[in-house]
Image 1 (cartoon, each protein chain N blue to C red):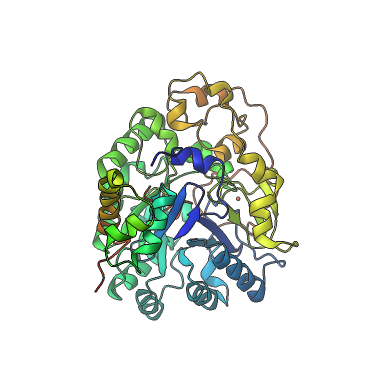
Image 2 (image 1 turned 90 degrees about the horizontal axis):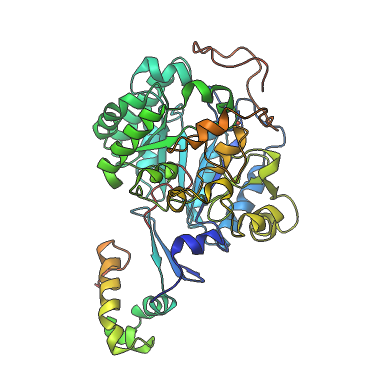
Length: 73
Length: 388
């Protein structure tokens, strides 16, 4: 994950796919995912408002679908 | 979450390339008539193993995601495998392009075991006659044997890389069948008039009708077939092809050549596109971030004669290198402009730039195509595998 002015670039070495985070807030959410009990908490502590949660849910689901993030095991 | 579109972001450049092409050597066992880097003979100033490792350390610090290693034939460097291991140990992905000469069963086993290494086998004809006319006698069999070895070793998803020419444009389905047979992925790229390609471009570049068929074929195959974003000039037909559809030269990609010179893109080995050398103080990082050429490329570009064209937002004037090496102005149409503006502009070209480097073999080249003019002296695609 490489921070950029517009958000960040993500590269998956297994699938060789590149993804874009078009929001610096989404980058903060991702950085907090590992240490947060739930994705919702990661969003809240990153400053995502309630109204924006559905958009972030969709973004995280997209990243999960491309294996950029994974459910904790 | 509204920010500038990515295309706009990328036009102003990134602090580090997403990926870059690194040609490790000009030495090559083949003498392909369209070689972008006019490769053949090894350059005595070639970067040493230690210098290469220092570059890799820098790429790791800059968080470059992967390097496309090419040449020449990179695998002929005696330290090639050592360097590949060094790159992957430093968390940079590798894809290397090869004609397959060194891909023995043992090497294939090794490659199949690594997640960080991808391989791209060059093939410019789906049949032996079409391929060997461009790449030289025996090269088709060498490539097919390498594919067989990779397949047998269990390497899935390696790339079969094809430069689309007038002679092979009708073979796209056969290329796809070859890639499928070996569990590989087909990658099609554009013939550039760079290096020795300048000498054969007139005879080898696809006709207008072939370009249209290619575009339809690519649209029909979507992301199954990679293009390294190299056909973005075809977006002017209507729908954009998968990829970023922009020229990333000096903005998101670049080329490091065997002697450490940094060029704006792999298709622009010419002093006009030389940004600096990694041997100078500040190394690659300084060239990427501060060179005059790259700073200039990241300024808003004018479309010149193309600005008034309805397709300009799609094709953005096409490929800088293709224009330069065919003698066209950089702010005019691409020589293969789908609206036909390039063909018209080409008829008015009086002189083309002379190549500034040539490492071609000096002995007669054993090809039968006979297209090289004696009076003139070169993934993959830079954005291969790229999904925005």
